[in-house]
Image 1 (cartoon, helix red, strand yellow):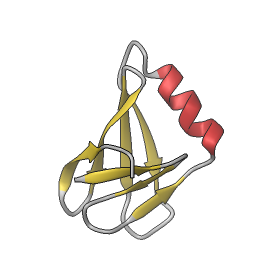
Image 2 (cartoon, one colour):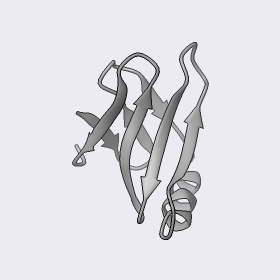
Image 3 (tube, helix red, strand yellow):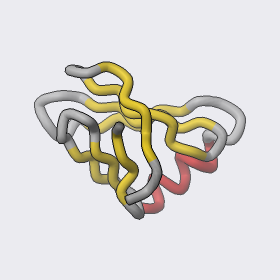
Length: 74
């Protein structure tokens, strides 16, 4: 399972870590109250996308593994 690393990073099952500013993640959670929103990380060769819905992170889309469900905080 993918992990949300407090306060604003995410780790995919493939080992890739996506790091964002804390305010960016807070804003995405706020925007996701009524619809799904996506936050892309293209800092590496492979593009990962973090998906938010109803104020929560629900999964990471990995180019190698597909959708990886988010587990609880570490």
